[in-house]
Image (tube, rainbow, N blue to C red; front, side, top):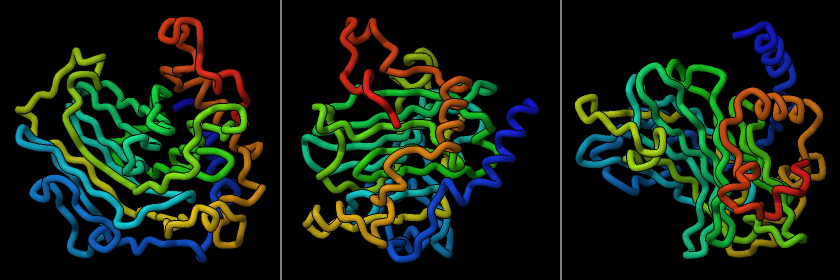
Length: 295
């Protein structure tokens, strides 16, 4: 790590209180996976600590696994600490995302794409609105995500979606619905995590496959915080600006100056792919949001 990196993250440490708001009124998580989530796929591939605070998903040749939140949410902030698969992980996908249950789904995706030993993980993000996605971005991470747990966050409000890694904004998707751009704003979503076989596409476009001799593959989750509006059937309540719905206050309608600096740093040094730069894919007709401001 360069001196520039050390200086940058010294600033992050000092200013983390500015970047991440603190609220007690709307915290809806207990910190116990057994109480806040249900296992939605392959219970025999899910291991939870005795106190319920850490959960591990495993993947082998028989199955992957997943778990989902009991509640659904419309706006808020979600934090989760994740430790990714050790060693050879090519072809595997660890997913952490918000998704609605409708056919024309809304979704905010983080997908960790495994790699061969010695090569870095990639983090792919995507935004779906009314069933339409194709908004992929990929970044490399500036640390070893196998060595320890790191915090991955989604801030979702009426103004924007901000995806953060250890409080550093890595993706911003603004609400430009008034300009005809899709934005998740009315469908409640649940929090989902999964570990699955993505070898057809995940690593070098499917060139590197899963080595089942190295199974089982395991990814662990802990220290989550769900600070969000629980869906009760009335979107007006979740869209309101209040002390409980702190995320909808005007101060969170865009990145602050420190966040913009960190975001530009990620874009400059760690961006691998941005759909808004892929003229060939869209035949010169980039999606409308690509020409609109991010903050």
